[in-house]
Image 1 (cartoon, rainbow, N blue to C red):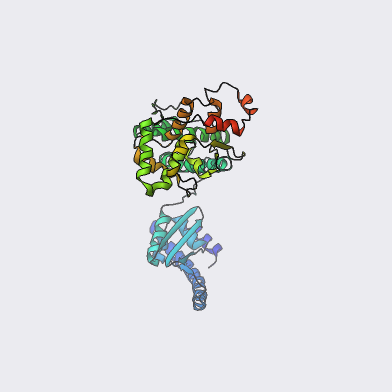
Image 2 (cartoon, one colour; image 1 turned 90 degrees about the vertical axis):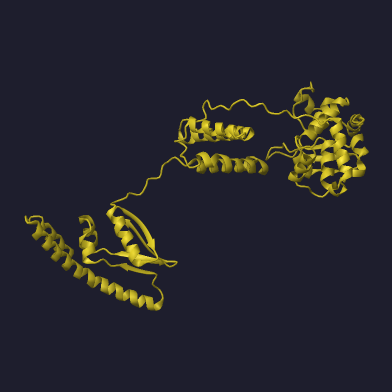
Length: 410
């Protein structure tokens, strides 16, 4: 029986007034159509058997009974009988899979049992046509955040990028990462930051606000959306001001180093930081000779030439030369931080830098020389302009002479 004949008979049934008679006629038509389909299926299945013998087959065809076809909605009957369409399955890692993406249906079902996958397929058909979701032109926040990080990567240092990535993935994405950027409101951002402040993460909340501000400035330009960062505020937080170690604490630090010779490596690093003002991240770049210690400024921006500093070896450092190893093997920054915290739990290793700068000024060293040694671009004690400082090139003799003032009693 041809498609044309089946279509003609189906149209004729529309004019049969008796519903029972119409159903009986439909069964006859379906049986006739099934005979045509069965013949074709038999031919295909024979091919499938031959293919299995050669090991090339990875699937087959789903066969429906007349009862199953008769119980299908009218439009589905037409798909499987009038148009003589069959449903193929494939076997992947021991699972029967049916993927049917045509005629308005988007069906993906799988099971280890062929009869189960068949039932799943019929159940999906009964749900009707499910159009494929249209992809929004607005990305999810986590997708846009990654795009922003990719933009930043060539312009910022690896350590800074790492901090950004950790903050985005551990703090921001869990809150708004799965929202589209056009859906995020000021309330969403404000509530997220407020919760962070309530949890005591004041510094992290400040960094998140900075990152979100930069990201949404770009998103506004790229996607013409309303900026949710407008008028977002953080509660005032009084940051504990760092301060120099007292001379008693300085004596405690040196005494601890002498009493713990097995910790000479990490304690050498701490003492060198104390008497040079280097940042902890700059220690790994340290070199030296018999007069100066050299390092590369941690604040050099990526893509710019390294800013090298030289710091004369002071009388205070010479006094403790017996407990300092200038050629100490590379020490991890975290090891220095933890060792210092073990001695002064309430202090931070950056306060060693505060101590050096404070003592240098107390000893009367030229403030501009202090600024050059510690790598600051701006110092309220230095009255000359940045341009004037650019034209100033102090001699080694002058720097060594000034550092001789760095001598005091403990």
